[in-house]
Length: 121
Image 1 (cartoon, rainbow, N blue to C red):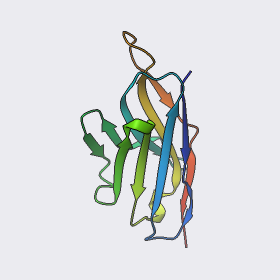
Image 2 (image 1 turned 90 degrees about the horizontal axis):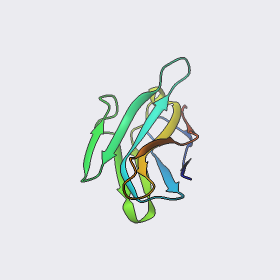
Image 3 (image 1 turned 90 degrees about the vertical axis):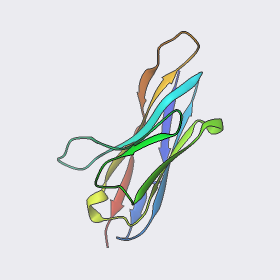
């Protein structure tokens, strides 16, 4: 079975930086897409950034120029580098991925448990 585990969340002051990591483990043949979502209290979960095989990336307008998503395919890991953090970035951040366990199987979507990011002075 496949698991996604996030790490790197915590408390940071406005203007600070933080890097989140998400490692996929288990029976994995290929990871077609990995991304990050976030959910603030009282709000719906929203897409933050996504990375597709081939190097394509996409970002929410609110984080463009501040956040960078990257992948280490050898480690089945995706990262989210967050710079110039704002209080509005406070949320639980969730990793997700579309993963095929073996050839000829269609990929499935998996979610991590979430990691808390709090931006406050």
